[in-house]
Every structure is written in structure tokens, then in C-alpha cells.
Amino acid sequence: MKTSANRPASTPAPSLDGGQVARLLRPGFALAVLGLAQLLDVLDLTIVTTALPSMKVNLHMGSASSAWIIDAYALTYGSLLIFAGRLGDSLGRRRVFLAGATLFGVASLAGGLAANGLMLIIARAAQGAGGALSSACVLARSRRLARTAARRSPNASRIVAACHVCEHPDRPPPARTRPARTSS
Image (cartoon, rainbow, N blue to C red; front, side, top):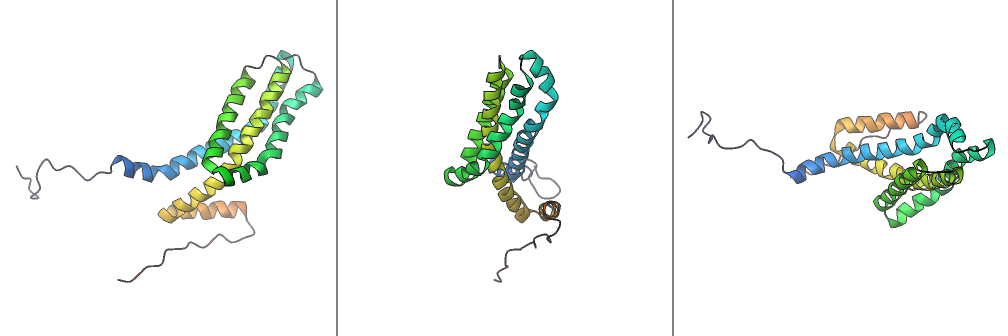
């Protein structure tokens, strides 16, 4: 049976297979995951200050020892950030990011289950180490993914240029480069 356009009625509309859809969605999904990981790393440094008074009371901690809840995270995060970037360069950013995110998650669970102040401080130090590992790789991978997305879509290149202006208001945005066309 034919339709009026001389096309069989059972011919399906053209569609993308699973691999093509995955390749199209991968950069956007990866940027969302990396952005969420970076948000958690930075948010975890500051969010504890709101819960610190109740943690102090529940864990029977003094003022000096409760300050270490914040300091343990900040010190390990700041101390390991450059080392984590170098580790990501040598071992692979994806591998180091996953190790850092796993360490961060396990340490968060340990911090939530901490029975005393010392356990919480140790868990916060481990969270800082995991945050440093993941954060260093997030910055490098998101920059690479943004460049890839900018090559694929003109709208993405506008977003990348806007982000550049926000980061560096004193420098002009990078020029959009187009691949050279070959005449055939």
C-alpha cells in the first residue's frame, strides 16, 4: 500500500540510534555532572558553618575543636589542589575525578555517621582531599568540554565567550575559529 507521496506506509521516519544520541548528549551531561561536583565541593566548605552550633552541642565539642571541623576541610582542600591537578595530568582526569568523587561521598557518609568530634574532623579532612581531587579535574575537563561544545554549536560558543568575559573582564573574548574549508 502506497501513500500519496509514493512512499510505503510502513517506512519509519528517520531516527538516531542510541550511539548517536549518546554522542550528542555526552558533552552536555558531562558538563552538568562536573558543574554539580564543583558546586558540592565549594558548598561543602561553607555550609557547615550553619550547622556548626548544633554539631558543637551534639558532639560535646569546645570552641577550639569545633573550629577544626571547618579548618580540616579547608586545609586539605587547599593543600592538595595543585597536587591533584598534576595527578590528573599524569593518571588521567576522569580516573582522578572518579576517585575524588568516591572519596568525597564515602567521607560525607562517614561524617554523617560520626559519633564524636574526632571522627567528624577526620571525615572532613578526607572530604577536603576528595574535593581537591575532583575539583582540580573538574576545571580542566569542563574547559575541554566547553571547547568541544563551542565547535559544535554557535550558541555554545557564545556561552563560552560570555563565561570568558565574566572570568576576565579586562581581556577581550577569544575569537571564534572556524575550520578551514577545502575547495573540491
